[in-house]
Image (cartoon, rainbow, N blue to C red):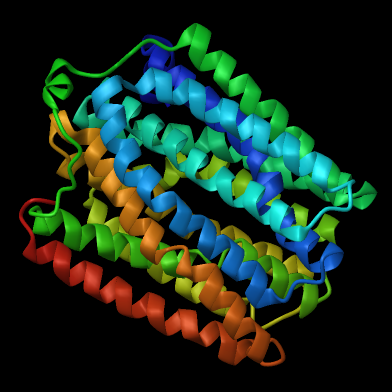
Length: 397
């Protein structure tokens, strides 16, 4: 705990990024969780159509990840961190208005899809800022600290959203609108530029296509998040339509996820401190696979709360290791490029999760064991592949 206090109080940049994660996630978790229900209930979209919107959002984000990462290296982290949330503010304001006005559904789709690339830019910038500002040995703890803060926001957001949604789904866009604007102000008045001098040497946009080891692990990590990506859109629709959980129950379940991150992220880091990032990823995706399968075994809300807690341990195991692994592989002068490339690769693979999950759910919603078995086998297979790959590679030791 002393080390975490030192990171916060002795490094104001870490403190700013950590605070931003709380506020940003507080708002956006509401939109991510309840927009699928809004589209199904208000516009009568199918599960697959909802999944396709999230998939399309990821495709639109791809060029923003690649060129945005390069741009962060070229013009700096701070300006991107100011302009991106201002754009998000305008988009959430638009979504709020369209939920009360009869307009073509395509406008709602466009506004929602455009939120994703801006969110990706903010995330890339935060990861690069953290990498710039923290020594390599402390990066896992620093990324974990940001995750804990984000999950303080996530523990509150869905619960608030669950109650707000009972008065109308449109009101759930007010909170992300306010928090996005707050983030723009925070970075405008409190954040200083962290770009190292070597980054100014970049003269053209590029992609690390020749770094095969980076590309290999980026793909493996992205496939791991493909399995984990059933947490969100797919699980929300499953719980609402297969088990008939209401919005308050769903909000509480996701809030528990945030609470478990807050309470157990530090103990998990301590217990797994001897493991490499790749070994942590292997263990984490295996936990995800098993706990997802357990959702098929009972409709008891208390038992599913316990399963959610166990699933979150897998998240605690995986998430900081993903960022630390990319930080380890990225050259100092190309951190934006590498984090952007990782975001682009993830944008091709991980977002297929809700598309695939909602498509399969449309056919297998009445057979939960068969549905969740798909992700059980995928997750266990990836865990084995990660473990073997980590032992072969010297660069990720």
